Length: 184
Image 1 (cartoon, rainbow, N blue to C red):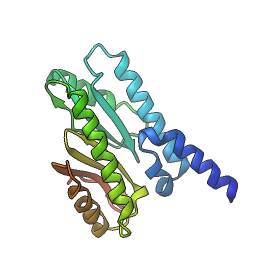
Image 2 (cartoon, rainbow, N blue to C red):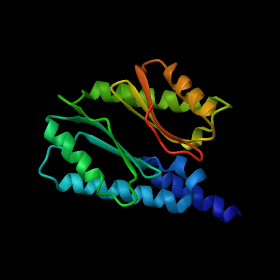
Image 3 (spheres, rainbow, N blue to C red):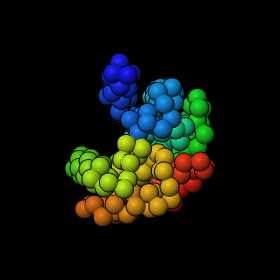
Image 4 (tube, helix red, strand yellow):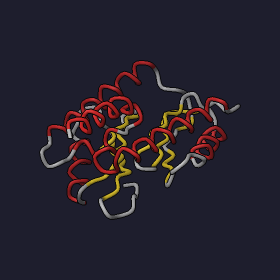
């Protein structure tokens, strides 16, 4: 038992950059590894692409790919989504990439602070199982990915995130346990 918990904690630390921490409790270690591999493969293919995709952030949670960030042209946005669909185990692609100039370093730092504040708010809410949510922030927009235990929990998580200073709006790509995922 202790060995399994240690393995899960080590895996969570290793995979945390791809949002796999929230997946481990619901989908298991195999699904976390599949999501990590899908994200790595998508990022690798984007780096090899002739398109301007270096401003694209890729997160994969339970087969849902979230693309966010900025690209200079619509063609780049389309190519990023095409590449995302080539990932193993990808069941949905949420293309939230904006076309235009890249965010400044200050804006990126503010998004990171907002992301940490949202994570802390979710962790502090006893009615939300925060480990089941991956939080990404881009230009003040919070994206929640993961699995909610119920519609009420999802609503509460979104409301909790929306109350955090610096959040302009909340978009969820969260599956309610036993149902399909839909953006809200």
